[in-house]
Image (cartoon, rainbow, N blue to C red):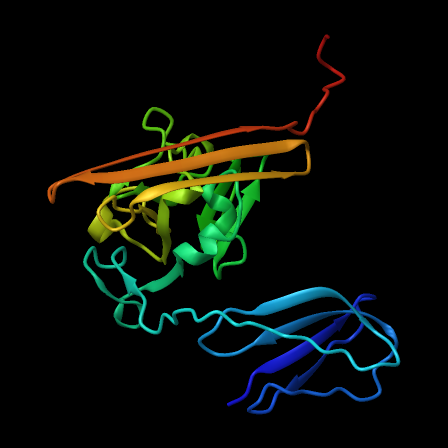
Length: 259
């Protein structure tokens, strides 16, 4: 098997791919003079990418360094049966978002990681407000999805409402997110007829050290978050995590209401 080299034109037209030989050499013929993004991928290694590669009359030489990465062949879920088991053996449809995907994406709430999962509908109602349901029937106050954080109910008890922006979890502290599609009342009781969303955080025994991230985006969003974890001996662990962000939410003026 050889590494796959893909060139993507800057104008968004059709990309082209070619397989490199055992020495890493590759060639594209009849390439238009333009600026390209070059992407190199190989199984078991992270994807290498370089933008702004100008192709003209002369040959272009590139050196790509691929970093080895792990391949998760048998992901373990604990939400479908409340015990560790392979996803392929779970008695329900389970979708999982791994720690690597969470780390590579800056978000204000954990629900933004769920967009695009099969059977999951995310209704965004503000800058950091959203509602998530499984198997349809979504609205801004739906509580049909049971949300857990480390096996604890994460919804607002007094309202029976999933306020995801109130959940005290940060990107740096989330190990994985599991979505179980289908009835879960037999294992989790009421309010889980449509499915279960389980946010599992990192243990201080297996993930120690300090992590800080800074991000920004549209609507003047600025965010800084961090996590610190450590252990005392073999039986006591601790961790601290926090997040601060600011931004301009969408405004709405109701003509019928007074100023």
